[in-house]
Length: 335
Ligand code: NCD
Image 1 (cartoon, rainbow, N blue to C red):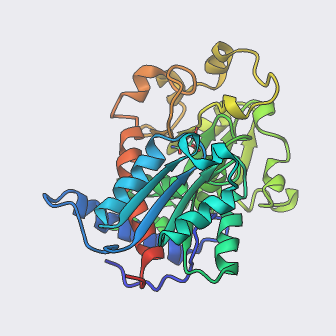
Image 2 (cartoon, helix red, strand yellow):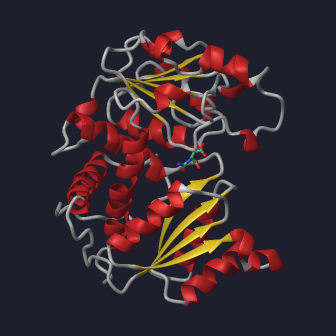
């Protein structure tokens, strides 16, 4: 296990993550991956601590992944689902968080459809001088740090399974394709990939990738656009050409307010990832998708299931060890 001294109480965004923090997470996640391959897949790290999963928005893999990660670390877990909670009786989100606080929660894992909710809860916990950590499990279109980190881990581990580190990605080309406008996964990945020295190519129809997207992110200005190694395209070909990895994103229909696409069939024809289109990439290209997948839209169904190209199942597996690493660091020193 790494001896890195962790200084961050909350994990809300990857925008200001340092190289040392990325590498500490990657190396610790690799150690936990090893633990998960043992017969006894549990360690006592968070014994006695309470991890509350406060999911105000539907989720399959992220919620289950945090739950199993906390359990593998021997924490006690509480699960909350908005639809069956007192929110339906008019309780505010902050009051819900305070209720979990009063039950002795040490770590709150929060997902909400509005950007900024995990930040607001973290601020309130700090204001109350409660030593509770908040982990953002996806807030609106803003960020999804644990997904960004598990994608990073999946890619780095493919290159060096024993010592995954961001330096391995220096100079690689990664295409992020799909509904970038509405995607918190894209935003978190952009931060981590740029910090890793990756050349990031975004590709989507103009309605899903505004011209000034990078500036809107606060990431760059037109002058240093190239320096930042972030490129935007309204066509797929320049993004795929010689790419080492292709990250596909779900069309976030629940966040679309207008008719942003002519038809799903046309979208698939132009931007859907297929074996044929992958011929433009490096020969051993790999494809990622955070899930849930709209089969046959963002990615062709056969490609999704082909282990030669698809890292989708690896992403899910990596998610558990990466989330164990996150809980380990922010839960450290309290038990
Ligand atoms: C993503 C999410 O919820 O942001 N999924 C996930 O966490 N695995 C992406 C998505 O919903 O498309």
